[in-house]
Image (cartoon, rainbow, N blue to C red; front, side):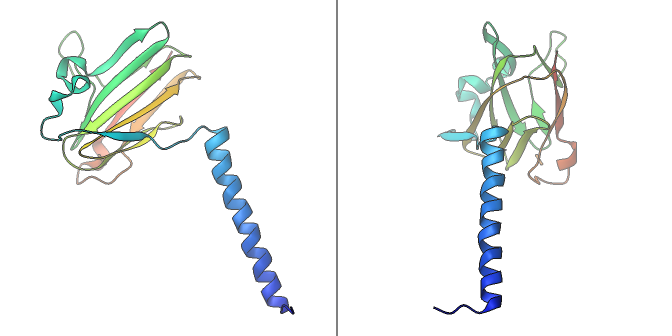
Amino acid sequence: MHLHKYEKIWLAFGMASLVVFLLVIGFAAFWKGTHPQSSLDMIDQNNIEAYDNFKPENLGLQEVADGKYKVNIVASTFNYDFGVDKDEKPVKTIRIPQGSTVLFTITTKDVVHGFQVAGTNVNMMVEPGHISRYETVMKKKGEYTIVCNEYCGIGHHQMFGKVEVY
Ligand code: CUA
């Protein structure tokens, strides 16, 4: 079979791009540990408090065992609800000891939101009617900004929070 010179160049370009794309995906998945969240569990978005994790008293950070934590969050326009502190003020910063395993569980009351802890491998889509979960290990000390990365309306840029690993 005869291939024209330009066809050969194009074929080589196509194959090289495929290899590059696979390497990029492989790097993100196996080296950086980025995976899609679990969102198999369904929930009634108009009655999220029927689900234990999202009862007001269960929101925010809880220690479940030595070095193991869970964080329950409710997203809504335009806020993340991490519960309240002992002075009944809304929690804005989640403080986690370095090296802990943390399970984030989040749902939304209204529209699609994002939940990304910038600089870590936590990056979830939060869909109405679904419970999104992601477990990670907080390896490095520092402050990490939580951002909503799905455009959810006029106050989208005001949806943020903070994780502090100490
Ligand atoms: Cu919530 Cu953008």
